[in-house]
Length: 189
Image 1 (cartoon, rainbow, N blue to C red):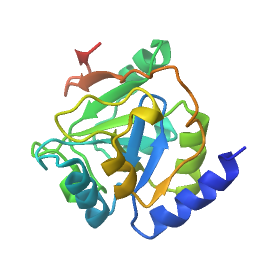
Image 2 (cartoon, helix red, strand yellow):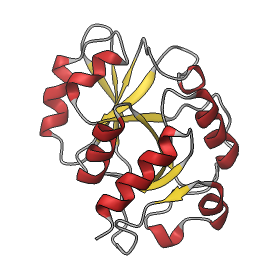
Image 3 (cartoon, rainbow, N blue to C red):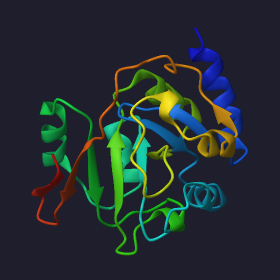
Image 4 (tube, rainbow, N blue to C red):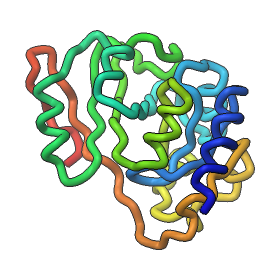
């Protein structure tokens, strides 16, 4: 019901450098333009998060990965396609992203979304989105929308209505690190 309106409203906020609270293929996330340093800094402040702790980036298509990292990853794609839940891959050599989003070692976590809302939003925006759990740092990530702290809700510029009523808690993604030799290491199953 809200799908199309949520995409339009989210796009307006993202183009202005604002923050959105939105459902992802894992938990509810705080998002912004992953190329906008000021927007990324706002998320760190809202979450009271140390800027040394990186956040992840969501993309709509595998082909877009090479726009944001110099580390090709064909073997990882096979792993992702066979996984039963979303997979975030840590790539070295991030590029074309906000500097304060990239880890001190030059790495970035990227997930190709399977969620239709996220995919359509990212495709319409034409840039990657930041995704970080919708919690204050140090507290557990909320499993459902109703568990999100009011400080987070008040700190964003737009809250997506789509999927707010879902009561089935979501789980975080599997996290793997792509090694320079093309192999990968599972960080979080």
